[in-house]
Length: 216
Image (tube, rainbow, N blue to C red; front, side, top):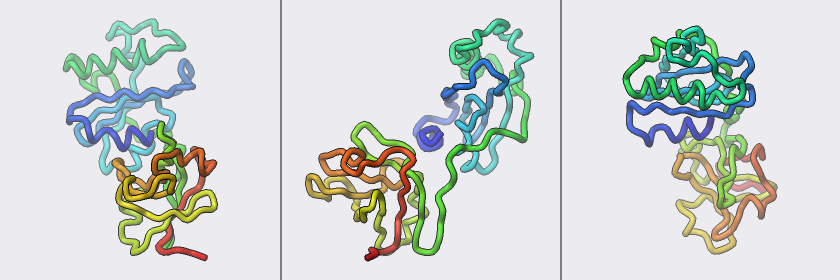
């Protein structure tokens, strides 16, 4: 959900995004369609679009009307592969202009919220979590740039360390830990020419905070 909420803006308006992490496939879980900022998102209603909806100002939210699947020729979907048998065909129908969202879904005021809480904000400190680790071992948090951009001397606290904020990776010496605002506009902890996750023993879910100034 984090990646969906951060990455969609790099696609042109009119894009239909299909996101599937669906351990509840074949159960009574619903399928969510969301219109936001000129984009359409289709995903299982299990919290995957929760972050996107938290950030959206006025989204149009729908649940797929399964009674209309027959009209799409989808009357016998597999119980274990809705990505192939429902999500992809519905997305293709809408993206091609053959159907509208209203043709296949009904508005809903309810959806499953994001599993990840928002960062805790207090005077001089913001506390969040590591939401993912990329292939380079960089620790990516849910702390947005806007929450810390007014700090005069921001310092990141993670795994018992205080890590200085830098503008980019090359401003640290090889082997040195650094923190920065990454290309998704969130706080990230890295190790210059190394793997921060391995070096710090941190992984997804690890607490991370940004304070305005060093502590002793």
